[in-house]
Amino acid sequence: MTVDAAARTEAVTAIVRRVLEAPQAGPEEDFFELGGDSLLATRVLSAIAREFGVELTFDDFLMAPTGAALAERVAALGAGVRERTVLQVPMAEAPAERSEVGA
Amino acid sequence: MTRAVVVGAGLAGLTAATALARHGVEVTVLEARDRVGGRTRGIEVAPDAWADAGAAYLGDRHTELHLLLSELGIKTTPTTMHGASRFDLGQDARTEAGRFPPLAAVALGDLFDRLAELTARIDPVAPWRTPGAEQLDRQTAAEWAAEQLSHPDARTFFPLFLGEMMAADPAAVSVLHMAFYLRSGGGLRYLNAFEGGAQQDRVAGGAHQVCERLAAGLGDRVRTGEPVRTVHQEATGATVVTERAAYPADAVVLALPPLLAEALSYQPPLPAPRAGRHTTPGCAIKVHLVYPAPLWRRHGLSGWSVSATGPLLSTVDDSPADAGPGVLTGFVTGAEAHRFAALTPEQRRAAAEAHAARLFPELPPPTDCLVTDWVNDPYSHGCYAALLGPGDWLAHGPQLAAAHQRLFFAGTETSTEFFGLMEGAIRSGHRAAAQLLATC
Image 1 (spheres, rainbow over the protein chains, first blue to last red):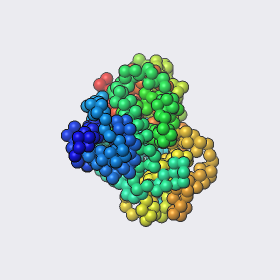
Image 2 (cartoon, rainbow over the protein chains, first blue to last red):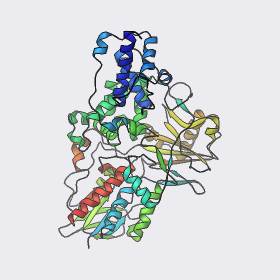
Image 3 (cartoon, chains in turn green, cyan):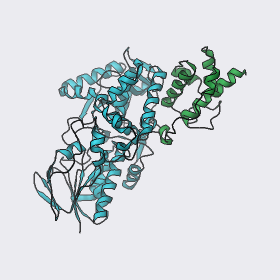
């Protein structure tokens, strides 16, 4: 894996962790098995669009529901992760109550 | 012995009355209609097969409702959905594998991000104390959407989402009320979800049984056909006057939607109103399309649909759990409910059946089409719950659950937890009973 690919996987996985409020989620773990649903999937996709400038579809997400696989889809659509994007990956948004994303 | 009169035999009133009776209070429940249940109501779609014409769904977090169901020996049934969905969002009706609409996912994600950000800001106990509440209370959800949402798919989806979540036209509610409602119900995702969310289960045999059994437990303490007109408070007691009689009491629980509570006459007048000119009825009309069996399942369809134009903005399979008729419930919500309500019964049925035929051309015409109009129901005045418009939360929020001398207020709108849901009604009933008992 190149440095770029590793950084991209880490950045996308960070988005997944933030949306799911699952700080331990790994890049190979399935989003839906981690408790994600379609509503939260769209929030991962909107964050990817903001950070990478790439608009994935819901079908893209269903075919690649892990941090690593989503990062590959991002790469396949021609966007590289930029250095400053990686540095700016937010660690946490305003700590929404746990109920915000359901149990 | 303390004497209490409870006005309203919906979930809130009957929960309060049951709690009061258990504590030795001599309680009388006055109900305007000839039935109990309020915004829960069963309709018999086939012999011994019931559908919910009003409140229907519950989730695991609705703990008081679950407790009550188990006390009453009533079971739940899951709302599991299998099969494909139909969407009519501008182009021709389309079939999709799951429940996800054929709209730009990134645009919907951006909408949900913005809603989640708003929702997280709300003070869930006292929404009027939310930082920046004045501004959130001043703006309507429609104005907010016009300002915040640029993608056409987000603009298409937003009113449908709000209609489904809270039976509201975005122009009728403040941003504060929208964000509060979403927060109160457990957050965007919980409120939206069937499995793992607020629509996970239905009450087997119909939610109306809850009130019927509570009323049966109270026996002749419940009097139906008693519309209350005036509530008098004096130094020594209170009197509740109906069209037929006057009921003296030491304390009164008004378990009514705020618009109905506001319409009663109070002697002396209440110091502060609980609704204002921007408070409007929740806009929900339920349409039950009855088929010999859940025929859509034979075509690999779940019965779930979403349409951008009415009348049936969404449909869901509400067939009784056991073998029997198929019931497709259509939701007519928000601004569409007002348009639909203005039609004659024949026109409503024709419009609903035409819409079903357009969405599901593979189905035969339904054998029956039952319409329940909550918007114009004089003794509910809206469903799911009252819609708080611009200025309402700041002006009336602090009074919604506040007792006034011998008067106590219940109803789902007086619960900041699960506002608008059956769970909120039950919690409000417990709270009002506890407030009253504390004064005995």
